[in-house]
Length: 196
Image (cartoon, rainbow, N blue to C red; front, top):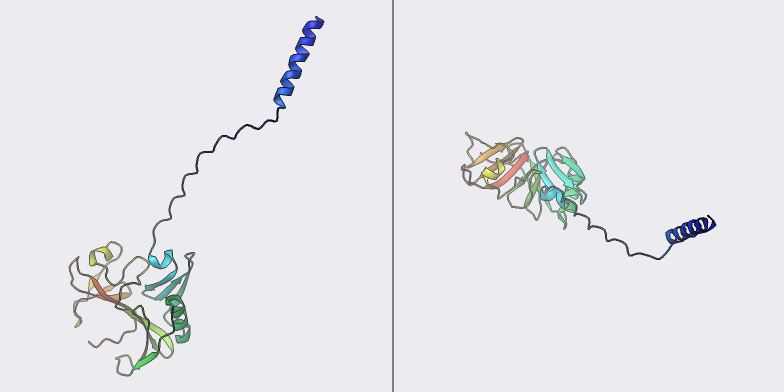
């Protein structure tokens, strides 16, 4: 009986010692983490920071995608400074056209083709005829009518004296042709100085 008890105690002691063994065992390599899903693609203005055109004015995006509106009615100096900071370079000179139908209008044209229109020292409209800036849903100079109509409606202005004029909500523009392959040649919103 004593031998059996001693054997049992010896076995228990060996088991306890074995469980206390502190020799390191190589860790099991973890499965590599699956790459995070890429964020949904957005308009260029939002993905890297920048400027977007819209029917109520402009919208500035920072690199995180946070947005700040520059609505029509913004003081002239504020609008010019904000756009100049976004576009880069010096603020443009402001010129005046006394013969616009709405009365004298001041213009500030930036290197990217964006032209801001002012009246009574407030931002009242914009016009662009160079590719680059787009709306948040991707409409810009160079877009085809078919691609624009994937996300918005285009209505041709039937009685316009200006070739290819269309409207899309609060934004107007011009197409090279009214066909699906026609491309946007210019866009505008707010106050204009077109001679019709």
